[in-house]
Amino acid sequence: MSDISLIKDKAKKMWSTFSAFETVTALAAPELIKFSGVHSGDRLLDVGCGTGVVALTAAHTGAKVSGSDLTPELITRAKENAQISDLDIDFQVADVEDLPYKDNEFDFVLSQFGHMFAPRPEVATSEMLRVLKPGGVIAFSTWPPELLTGRLFVLTGKYGPPAPKNVSPPVMWGEVEIIKKRLSESVRDITFHRAEYGNPTLSPSHMRVALEAYIGPIGATVKLLQPKPKKLAEFRNAMEDLLSEYFQNNTVIQSYLMTRAIKK
Ligand SMILES: C[S@@+](CC[C@H](N)C(=O)[O-])C[C@H]1O[C@@H](n2cnc3c(N)ncnc32)[C@H](O)[C@@H]1O
Image 1 (cartoon, rainbow, N blue to C red):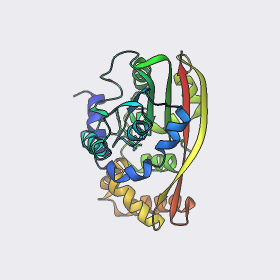
Image 2: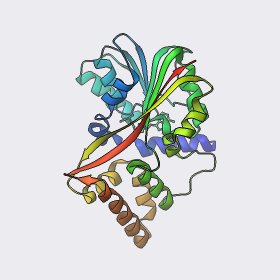
Image 3: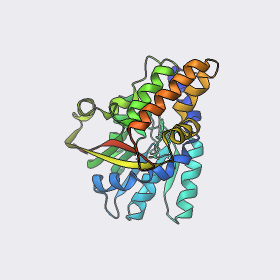
């Protein structure tokens, strides 16, 4: 198996428990739909769709929606979500670096905290733009390195296994100048907007426990540190200190960046 296939295999396992957080990321989905400007009848693709929170929100507006994600367990849940809502959405298991759609098929290609986890940004970007029509909208939400979730990923990277050499850190998708470099040859009218949502929880410790249980990269780091109790305690304390900075009124505030651009 190649390095890249191994990375994808690990990613699938890591993200398989993410559905517990769908009610949280569901709060950000309407913001991305509004920001991107989707209308009834538009053909829209949600990549790295997880359990389909953006796809379902778009389908409620009358858009014709497809969604794809690397992790089979999440696509099973996305299909259940569509069934519960009585929405007709084409969900497929697929890697954003190798999308099973035709060139120029969609009016909108969206990703909420999804494509940022593909290891090769240039491959993910070229696939997302390939399936988007000229004049169509690419829009995504990402976690910058200086805000809570980005800082958590940076912290996890410090305690976790060394990142493979050929993998770009996901939080680089939260840097405006890097996004401009990655997209600017193929798009025009690039715009950025900051937004936030609140994650209800009883304390920073409760939030830390939930992150360990359901957010794959954090859970994997805790597992790795089990034989080193001192290091594990240090990691847990650092997570709780960080979460405390964003905790108020039984909510952890998570801010993020949205990007929107038009394919040339
Ligand atoms: C933080 S979750 C976000 C899920 C969803 N978009 C949401 O907002 O709830 C990250 C998602 O990226 C997906 N993912 C990671 N690497 C991927 C890849 N190479 N191709 C497609 N999806 C990928 C994971 O399976 C997971 O569903």
